[in-house]
Image (cartoon, rainbow, N blue to C red):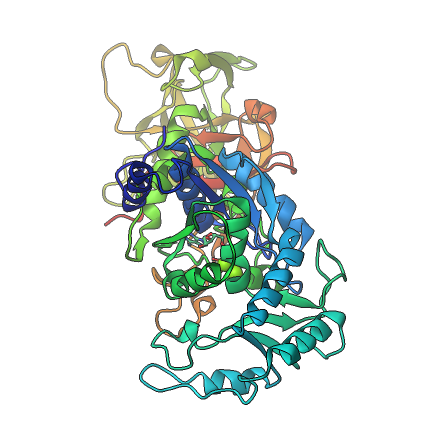
Length: 548
Ligand code: ATP
Ligand code: MG
Ligand code: MG
């Protein structure tokens, strides 16, 4: 199911269809630059781009906006394709802006021929200083009125590699006094000798975003070119470029919507790249990253990400959504699909002193009470157990209802036990709790109807398997990272990950598939690491511990 039929983008598409603007055709594209991996913000753009087409029987293509040789890598192309598929979207075609370099070049010559572009020999700083500012007129470049023939010759020599990087640019000749700075003779081509991931060293001049984007849309037959709000000021330039060219058909139209931002998160590829290249995180797929690869490793289902993006709708004003809201979608989906298991993260021993020597009980435990089809499994119980250290208190504080000396609790699905004594180490730390059990409470119910105030989880020591776990906290301590200093990385949480070794978990967890998410009872959802056996990443807790 896809939503979005009631948003302003759909209104425009419907109106175009009614008026026959594009003969009823709807075509969109998702245009990432392959200079990093996709993040949660891109998931938003993907749902908007694909849904807007598919809701009207149209198609959506993937187009790599690969016009900058310095930052783009084939490795990112592959990762983007894989992430898009994982999210559940199949592009009708995969295109590359770099495939249009020759056409874009010819169109640039055409523009020069119309007297609408010139080669400027000033440096970048001078050009931007001359651009002026709002309410401040621009200054014409001394090269602005170069004859057409000279511009053509200069541009051809730029292409031929006769000039150094940065020594010349091609600029559109529009209006140095326009209120919109984008129209003050924008740069269309620059000289760059970087190695391009697809065209290799065939080119030394590269088109800018503004010269490449609308024309790429036009070449492909895009009808509605959806992008984020920072491109509003580029729209007149998008239209201007297309108007100058001899296009035989209806021009695509650019429509802007708000970026998706989340609290405690940054979605700038440049900043995410910094976390990777500076080794602050383990890579693009570190489970703390808001990248799709990171979220996947963390255990976020693609279905939850897509449902969240859809339900947030499309808007014309930027807003930051609470990350807790995304987490509630994750929890909702995982509750339906995750198998329940018992795992003890901070183990201490619990020994039942009246347990018959050598006895092993096997309890049938439901794999998922939300889904009877998942069946049951046998869990071994003995008189030698592990429980969570924090489920026992030698001196129980007020309102502590779990295990303490003389207090009876339920061991989940097994028996009632009453703590009788402790064993301490040299420093006085409790290393073992001694208890008695009531054989009549087998299965976790007492025949005389007596009540206990709490139920705790456990694993049988002889049957337990060791595991390691990564617990995660917010990557940024502040809701709006960088609010105070302007630099989001100043607000990095130094304790965003806690690694636990020596966890003791039930044996069934050895059968968890790589990447599978399970629920550790009472503790949250945990994703099995895709590569490292018996290592689990906490996806999210069972309830919103951040609320209130
Ligand atoms: P960055 O500025 O971090 O490099 P970008 O916008 O340049 O990000 P692109 O690869 O160019 O990244 O983005 C591809 C598409 O995804 C664009 O249409 C862009 O508008 C959209 N997009 C990027 N970030 C977001 C976001 N946070 N919310 C919604 N759409 C986004
Ligand atoms: Mg970018
Ligand atoms: Mg971009």
